[in-house]
Image: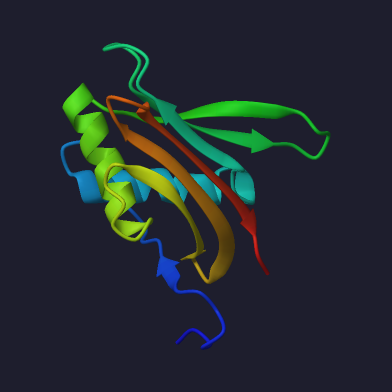
Length: 139
């Protein structure tokens, strides 16, 4: 159980093999899990932006020891509605109920390792449809 001084810790489950974007809970868990586990030590940034009907990609940007960065494709949403539903799921589960946008800082846990994470999201016509999640190992 978390210490009283510590923010709530959100466990990120192993999403399994399936990556069907219609299963929004598993799809979102797969995205966040990828952020924390890709590259052997965790990516630094999960990002997505609805640029056009053909650009519904979710990527992790990873940093290397030599200071370079590379982007890794994780998954794709199948429609604008599916993209927005995934954003809403992230807002609900990882950002304390912020379905249409906002910011949140949380502690995520996967496989016994903890990560500090900062979520920034917009999910409305005025600000657009995008997500940025920054994470770093907190232990």
